[in-house]
Length: 352
Ligand code: PMP
Image 1 (cartoon, rainbow, N blue to C red):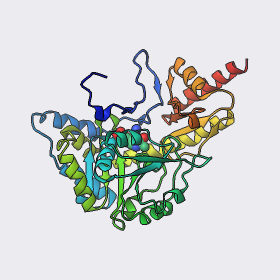
Image 2 (cartoon, rainbow, N blue to C red):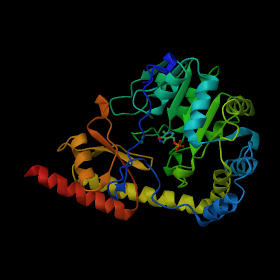
Image 3 (cartoon, rainbow, N blue to C red):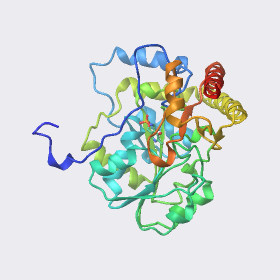
C-alpha cells in the first residue's frame, strides 16, 4: 500500500479472480466460462463496430436494451446494461443498500462491493446441506442479495421461495443474481412487474459465451432502473462499449444456438456428476454450469494441485466450511472425459 492510498479503503480485501496461468495450455474448468465460442453473428457485429471505434458508444445502449426487453418480455425502460453483471451488482449496492444480508457461502464479490461502498453486511449461514433456508430472509427489513442458483454450490431456490422473500421485504430491494439461471433454474424476471422492489441481474458471460466481452444486465421496475442509471451516469455513461453492445444484440438474434449449448452443458453435467459419484465423490445437485464436489479420499487442495499438475484447472476455495470441495466448471464432453480420467489416475496413486 502506498502512503497515498485513501484510508477509506485501508481494510478493503479485493476480489480474487480465477487464475489464468500462461505456462501451458490448460483445460480451463475454473471460472465457469462457456467452452463454446460465440455464434457467427457476434464476430460480424464486432467487425462492423471496429470500423466505428472513433465514435462513443450509445450511452443508452438502445439497440441492445430493446432486444433484451423483447427476449425477456419486459419494457426497454426496465433494462439496464453494464460492463459485466459485476457492475450492475455494484451499482445496485451503491443505489439501494443501507444494510445488506447474503449467505455466508456465496459469490465472493458481495462482501467486496459491500466493503467498497461502506455498507454494513451480515452473512447468514447456509444450512448444513449448503441449501438456503428462505425463512432466514423473510421479513428482514434489509437489502438482500441472493445468487440463484447459488455459487459455488449450484443449489437453487424455487420461485415461490423467492417470491416469499421479495413480498415480505417490500421496503427493501431484493437482488436476485441469476448469472447461472440458464442452466436449469427458474427466473424471477416473471415477478418484476408484480414487485417494485425486485431487481434481477444476469450476464452474457456464462450461457452466452461472452465472458471476454464483459456484458451484464439488470431487469426491474422502471423506477429501480432509473435509480441505477443515476449511478451509472455518475460513474461511466459509456460503460458498455460499442463492440460489446452489438455483439450482445447479435447473440440475442441467435439465441437458439446458446440455449442448445446450455442443454449440452446440462447433459455433460449429469454425466460428470454420475462419474464423480462412481469415484466416491459427494456432488451437490447443481443447476449451474459447474458442480461442487468433494472426495473422501483426497483433500480439496490436494485434488486441485494434482489436477493443475496434469494441466487441468478447477477452483478451490480456502474458506473453512468449503475447503474440502472443488468447484468444477462443466465444459465439453471431451474436457469432462479428460477430467474424469485424470481424477481416476490421481485417486489410484493416492491408494498406493
Ligand atoms: N454473479 C455470480 C454468482 C458469478 O459467479 C459471477 C461470475 N464470476 C458474476 C455474478 C459476475 O459475472 P460477470 O461480471 O462476468 O457478468
